[in-house]
Image (cartoon, rainbow over all chains, first blue to last red):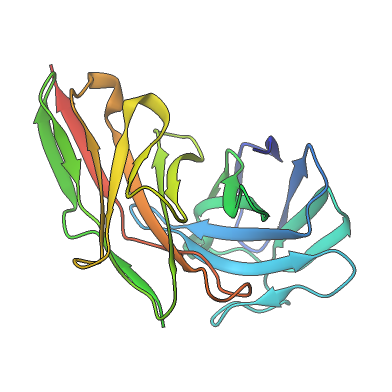
Length: 116
Length: 115
């Protein structure tokens, strides 16, 4: 398995500002993912972040709004830019441990964002 | 295209009774199936998975799930529910035939165990 930490665990932000969320993993992983979970909803994939290349965004998500960094194999950041109340969600970092015994995604504890 | 359905938004069970949380899936290749649990104000915790082998998979906290290929189902079960099992449960699927396939999550089922 993997141990994943996220900072901050929660934040309350003003409309129009930006927040950067950090994700740290205790082992080197190739693929990292960022998800959004809106209140009462399931998880929606924002983007896939591979080290050494630009993130791949899902339909409905753009780099200008959700820029992602992946400077090494254990760390990634997601920025929520120019926030509005509709961005209030839980943001989750996830890693994919692939191999003969794994093929499982593990999740961080999430960052609960409230935009006023 | 792959998809996963959790037909029940909420399941209510008395403590000590058996519980079942339903999940059906659709993939074009080999299904890799997962169950995750989310406690209040927490991230998702991995419970169990089916990749290949025995159709009955045992996981954390006494949970198990049965892979049924003919019914394309992967229902989560526990013989005796605990109040502490109350949480939001997500079924997920990925197409094991494609290494580039993404994991798709169901809509979630809220499990409520009454004392």
